[in-house]
Length: 154
Image (cartoon, rainbow, N blue to C red; front, side, top):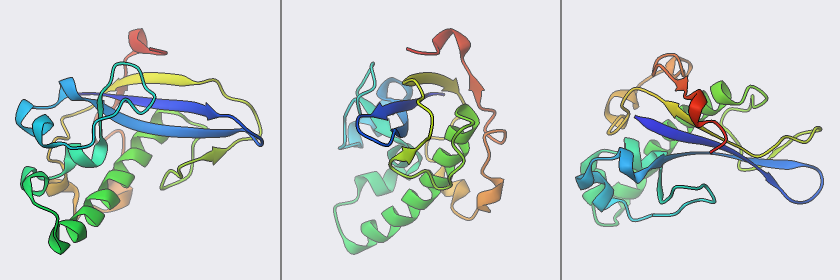
């Protein structure tokens, strides 16, 4: 499966950067893609893309109507997705050390915008096997993350 790791400079002072991890809809099975309501390019070429939480969520959760049970499970899916995002983004962008990854990250130096396509093991419906995992065990190595050099800086 291929995903995209993005770093984007946000205007203003001090220098702030946004880090995102998205999955192109073309990487998802059609039945899952059809159930994902949030579709955006998130400012990243080649969209629309899916958020990681929608990729790892159980298909039954995507089918659920809004209710307290869906909300509660959604919070836990977000927790697992944040651990995955931190593991993958810190592997791609070594300057990033915060876990979980904050929405905006301040840096003293100025970093260029960067898009990197990476290959990882399949994570669709991954919440089922990651929900009880020790966060320290959720690593880029576990998912065989590999940067695709011919695709850097899309």
